[in-house]
Image (cartoon, rainbow, N blue to C red; front, side, top):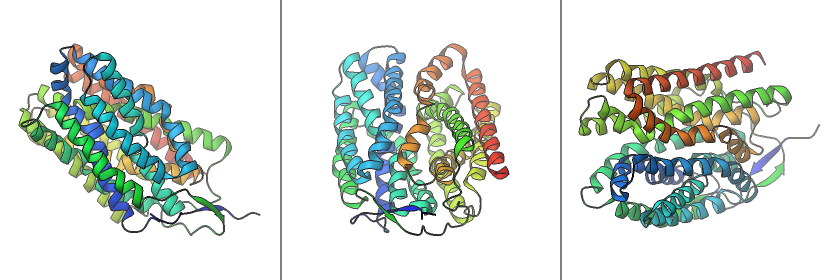
Amino acid sequence: MSLPSIATPAPGGTGGLPLIPALGVTQVIGYGALFYAFAVLAPHMTESFGWAPEWTYGGFAAGLLAGGLVAPLTGRMIDSYGTRLVMSIGSALAGVALLALAEARGPISYFAAMIALEMVSTMVLYDAAFAALTQARGANARRAISKLTLIGGFASTLFWPLTTVLLGQFDWREIYRIYAIMQFAVCVPLHLFLLPGRVRRAVGVAPAPSAGEVAPGTYLHGEARQSAFLLLALAFSLQGFVVSAMSVHMLTLLQGLGLSAAVAVGIGAMVGPSQVAGRLVEMLFGTGLQPVTTAWVSAVLMPLGLMFLLVGGMTATLAGLFAIAYGISMGLGSIVRGTVPLQLFGPAGYGAMLGKLSAPGLIIKAAAPLVFAVLIERAGQVPSLLLLIVLSTLAAVALFALARKVARG
């Protein structure tokens, strides 16, 4: 019987101590500049362009759709050429796309910039970063992924208030120019000098799996692999709609429920620390659990948090409980996105697998900001929240069913 093939990191950026902090910094800047800033800047962009909000959110949706379409290709590029090349080029292109967005003057240039921005985001955000850690650590990347998401959880906490403060001094175009400079000055050098190069494959004995991980040779195959993929893709797609909608509209939704702008920003900022708290608990105490167990447990917290918001959104205390439960669910969900595919399908072709998992829900995730904006405007906050509760509950059910199937073998 042939021995399993394991990844051997290329020289330079071998996955040592600097790798996780470096990726953590680039993920905070990446998510903050490419994703979370839009939630704060969108109303100002709409006012600047002088068009209906649907155009602003429609451009964002078109970008998410394009990003989903290219995600499998990005995953294959990462597997073939390594994360150093892909993420370094991606950071540079992200800076260019941010500058293009800052210069947009009409629908054509705006849509083109948003599409370019979300396409290159697949080269620099979590899926690419998880692949970097998997290329550096192989099948034992779970703990590294947890540590990375621990740092990345501060993206919304830092960039929502930061963007709000910057709006007091600059307009939205200048803010995007500042964030473009951060891509060039910080992210490109970190990716270029600290990430693994092209991964070589060597034949040898794979490292022993740590607690909660699956030994090589026990990954899913055949019909079991296909059904697990479908359940996982379904859950990720439904959660993707909720997270995509809330990441853009959370502040608007909170204010629509009666909270002041300052309180809404404060509640929104609580999501980041809650993500970090959930990830810290998982890193310290959850390594003995199977990732699929963590997946469904964390998924249950999302509809629970949304119910707190539904019941008492006008009460800051209950809104705070929403932020905590929702944040913990989001935080653990980011870990799950990296660790469950690693547990079920193994490190071989890991980048391409993450791309394939994101593809089925690309239309759902892309449509979420626009659909939710229209739903809030036409139906109001309560029906909009009920939709999110239903979708997140279905995602939790799908992940529970996946865990049961894995447990039965």
